[in-house]
Figure (spheres, rainbow, N blue to C red):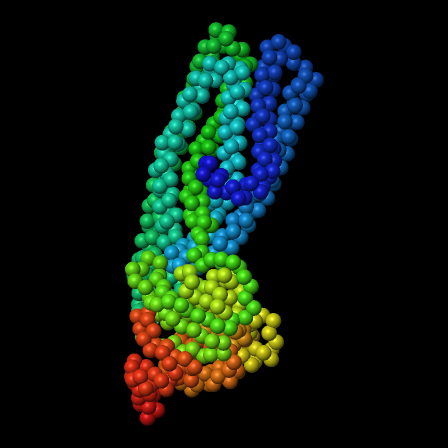
Length: 581
Ligand code: ADP
């Protein structure tokens, strides 16, 4: 309980007065609930003493009763309104915090937490925490207060009888405590399985074409089914605990009632207690039943939220390893320098980049080539601050990259990653992501530079054609060119094309490279490519092999070197020759 409150303290501490006002209004309820029992006592006493008159009935019985009921109604409604407001507020705060934390995470985080898992946490776990933080926590406290207030009222009537009746009822608490571990572990398993299921479902939806192409529908279905079954079995086990213990709780209540009836009647007979007091006592005993069983249920559900809170806190507490040390403002990128730069992915045993020394001057075009897996993408991803960096190894304008604000650094780089991200909106809006304030003329220019204008003419609604999941599906090459147009539009100091020309034909590639050489002549360009024709005009070309720079120079220099570049160039030239033949 305290752990849960602690994990929500960031919200509770700011909204303490809301919680307090609900508790304040809510606590009136158990007090008001005692009034009908008191009225019954007055009535029985009056019957005994033959004091019943119409005026007595009206003023002492009916009017107070109606007044109490009306106040109870007002109190319950006010509490409900306040509580719902708090719940909505908390839900919003939880979601915003969740999103804010996700948006600042680095690539390592997204490898640790998969999309389906993050989605399950954002929906299921946030909702569960919201329910407990907004409703259950206060209600549990109020139900507990009902038990206390009622017990005090009963003790005021007859302390021994009250204690004897309460003793078996306290067994409900003890049983709950004993079950705590088991139920908690089960809920943990349910949430973990839900996350796995979320991942599998999301993966199935995203890769539906591949699954169909390889006729893996049945296999995929069975996998989904397995996770659903596992979750079902664990939930069933928890329900079983509930089903077994619910009647047990009721039996305990029955025992308490029998004690009250039997012993109460005996005390009454012995004149230890008045008959009107016994009636009042039994009515109060009935007030116990609901809160005690409710607390039992609430504790069970509360365990779910406790697990969910842990799962959300994992996201809230995740710290990005990409940090801004000094948060300095970067006006423009002139030089980029890697000094004895090495990098290892989290959990790996070997460096994927080894002792890289490389300086890129302003206005230069750098070509990066090498075998698949040699570290090309990893190298350029450092510039957009996707990965943690070792101190004193990467510099912009002579200053450590970590001294600058990372968003600021990114704003000066037009980055086209290998996986082209399209959003389900119009082509225009997708291109405008590069620069939302660009004019139509500037968009046209970027589209021409990316050799994408002929495709726009073919699309049904031109620029307004919706692409992506809810619209037209673009080919791999079209997606690449749209992403390049977006980066061209950004017109940043540095343009990074990470294998972004792999799905376009040789002629289109030549057109794009031509635009690049023409329009970005005095700016810095970094081109990662497989086809060497894409980099042969670069001022500097580096060849990576197993994370090391093994060759460097201009096209002519590398051809003279007669190493990997030379061999690859000849092989590619021959391939192209065969294609044209
Ligand atoms: P390239 O772009 O030259 O094909 P990459 O930079 O993508 O090469 O990969 C370099 C090496 O790092 C490869 O061995 C690859 O398996 C590994 N690698 C790439 N991404 C990750 C990652 N997220 N986690 C662990 N290893 C990775």
